[in-house]
Amino acid sequence: MTSWTAYQRERVEGREKDVPWFVGDKTAAYDFAKSVGVEIPLIYRLFDKAEDFRDEDFPDNFVVKPKGLHSTQGVMVLKRIGPSRYFDFMKKREWSEQEIRTAQSEWFEKNRFKGNYKLIVEEKLIDDNGDDKIPFDYKLYMFRGVNKLIIQYDRNSIPPTGSWFGDDWSPFDTDLNFDSEWKVLQRGEPKKPACAYALLEAARKISVALPTPFVSVDMYATTRGPVLGELTLAPGGPYYGRQYKFREHFDQELGAAWDVALQQLGRPIGV
Image (tube, rainbow, N blue to C red; front, side):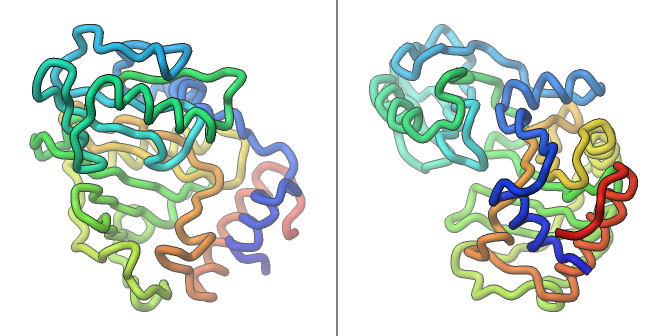
């Protein structure tokens, strides 16, 4: 039996065929989500170059992020606190407008999609509890419509706090299934969002429509229901093991789900 980690290694090293890498481009992922009826953030502006960024009477709260990077790389969750001054909830610091341009220009150098670069300015989503902090994000490990793991991230703490659910919001035992020293990530108590099952259904729609055996569908539970964050084909947290690693039995369980998804796609099993 092939483990999830082994399948991921094949993907990361470029040996897996027909991986829909196009969804690594955030705007392409948004377009794909919209095509299957899943909500996305409201986009205020796309800047062609990082140095073009200007505050064009955006709302007092907004998000700036490059479209070709994953996780929180280059993401700024901003609140206007004065003329050309902003507090960034992500970095817990203030930026001037010029400092935002400079920092985003540095992130541009790390951007995968330099030839198709955009700097996205979009709405700051409100968590379903209604506060103005960074909303919790949920990473749903999906295998052709089948959910096997849900990660809940609270990025308001330092280091961030992770909480976990099993398949379809069932309880999950981190001590049984993970190995970690819990230095890069804190462990928290999971809090099921009000739109939990709508969020799961949105992830299923995307997973079934996307031609791949596995995708992490990253969602937000907001005051207007489930909203897509991004689509991640190679989540690095458990793969590289800096946050935690899957214990062998759970790694094999996820690998078995990958096997079934490959069969559904008519593709060979194993690496």
